[in-house]
Length: 283
Image 1 (cartoon, rainbow, N blue to C red):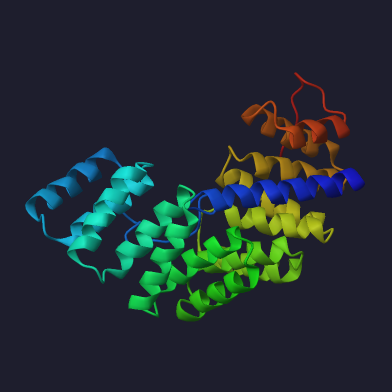
Image 2 (tube, helix red, strand yellow; image 1 turned 30 degrees about the horizontal axis):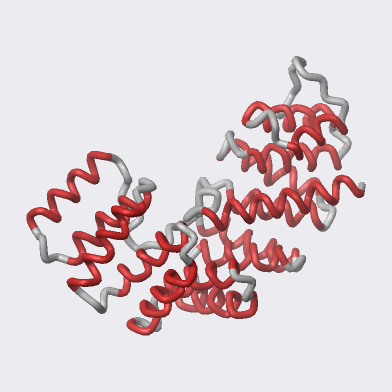
């Protein structure tokens, strides 16, 4: 049981590290930027570039294209566009928050914090800025301040799934598992088709020894995100707890198919007597 507890801790740490390093839940339920509904395809970038060319003094055009560049992983181009948008409109709240998101992604937390603060100073009711600033504060270990920002974001936007998700992660990191479960449940209710809240809630269920509930969540998670190491490995642990070695081994094997050197999956596979080359029932 001690090894299983250590496995939960490792999985929680790995999952939260992954969530902090991306804009999405693993893919998050809702984007942090207002324009993130734009797909990041080359065709859309070309279309937005045409808009910029025809409207060289329109800050919104640069902000829109910058958002898509950011989603495409083209951070420097995104920053150039956000800088231009802000130079054209120094009170453009969304551009500050969007630039902060890219700065946060690239590890420039001080600059990201300054931009989130600026966005809030311009519009004290801009929920996305409180959410983003809360994430930075959590990364810095300033948990009480982060909690206050997540609470504020939720007050301003009760439908903001990611605010509940991030607050749930904070609660989870402090072993306040029931509060975390409640927030992840709300995030699940507000969004569709995202594995992240299911994985997170399952890890909290595992932490309070409710393996049956965890397994149910992870059944959903692996179907939503079939390449998730954390989902498959956590599912293996849940079924291991339930005494179902067949599904446990199958889940660990699926994780190893994604990454053959993933230690938590290797250790779990060995614990349940998994044999390489054998097929296992997963559902």
